[in-house]
Length: 144
Image (cartoon, rainbow, N blue to C red; front, top):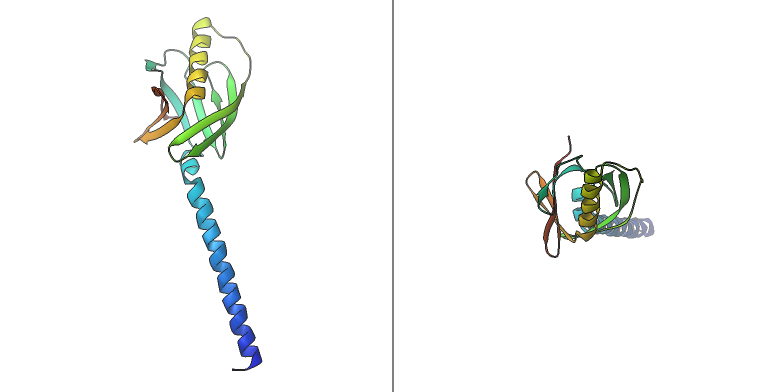
C-alpha cells in the first residue's frame, strides 16, 4: 500500500468514527427529549379541575419546546415546564391581571393551583391527565 493509500484509509476511518460519534450524540439527544417532545406542539382544553367539571370559561394549555401558555379562563398565562419520564414540573408562571366574574376567577385560581401541583402526566388516548402526588388534578381533551 502506498503512503497516499494509507492516508486515505486513515482519513476515511477518522471520518467514519466522527460520523458514528455524531450519530450517537444525536440519538442520545433525541432519546432524552422524547417525553418533552411528546407534549411539545400540543394544545389542550381543560375538562375537569380537581375532579370538578369545567363550568365556566374553558382553561387551555399549549406546550411548545420547554414553554407553556394558555388561558386560565379569564387571563392569559405563560411559563416553563420540564418532563422527565412521566414526571412533569411547571414553573415561572406569570399571567395578565384582568378581572372577571368571581366564579370565573375562582375556577381560574383552582386551575393555576392544580397546574402548579402537577407532578406526573399520562396520555390516555385523546386525554391528557396531569396528576399531583395525591391524584388527578387536571384532565384535558385536545383543543379545537
